[in-house]
Length: 90
Image 1 (cartoon, rainbow, N blue to C red):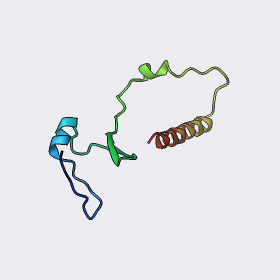
Image 2 (tube, helix red, strand yellow):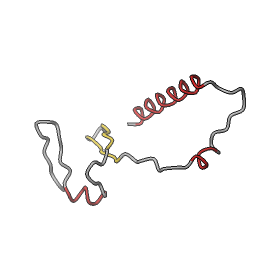
Image 3 (cartoon, rainbow, N blue to C red):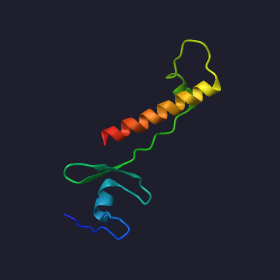
Image 4 (cartoon, one colour):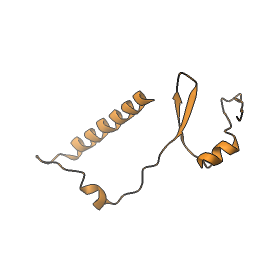
């Protein structure tokens, strides 16, 4: 088992052997999850790039056209809901 220490700035160094086994490189973003046993670090999974053609099929809508303002409000609501849902999971 590797050991590490909390710095005066609240930083923790993850031992090289652990970084290597998880393939974590410099700049890797991590989600910090509080658990009953301590703290769990999970890598943030990047969203793979996609083309417009790949995404267009998942956008089905039947009804009157929406204004740009209505679309922006819906996007903001969806982003806020995703943030709230992700906070609940961790």
